[in-house]
Length: 235
Image (cartoon, rainbow, N blue to C red):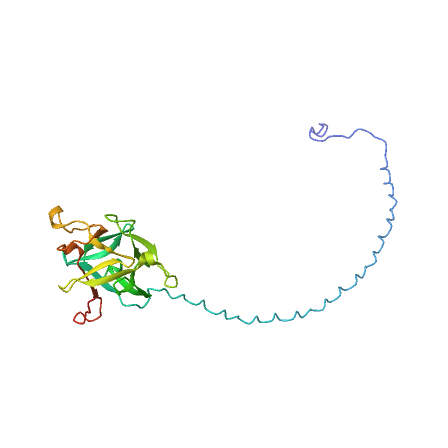
């Protein structure tokens, strides 16, 4: 038993006694010290002096004078309704640039007329002349070019004496009057549609015609438009 080798033991081979080499000393490298960067002193910014701007001057509000309103000839004047005996509920008016008759309507200024006397001009019988000026348009009724032609309209200037817009009246003895050209009393204002031709209707033209003795189409009345209906005056 003793002579048996223990199979569990191992034997290192015979090796010479080797010394481990000493580690080489690494020379310490001296790194240069970093240079100190000199701190740059930047100059302090100059303080900008606050500029005091002068306060703007207050502009004085200029009060411009209000434009003067030019007063028209027709302003503030008494107006009349003009109608003929043939149909008293129709009135003289302006429609589409023509003088015609239409159903009476007091609120329609085209049916309002101003009688403006003609500065001393008279017809050959001595009747004073006048212009008949429309309230709505400022136009005056003007003579036609002759008998049977329709009367015309023209802008009225009260400062100019225009005989073509002057008329005169003569009584007919029945409360109505005849309206004639001031410079030719033979031609009368006539509602151009007598009873034998349909009579007066809306749109009846106004013409000049020689005097007809019994024609109600040539008999006219001018009644004031008043604030009080019972105080009308007639011409």
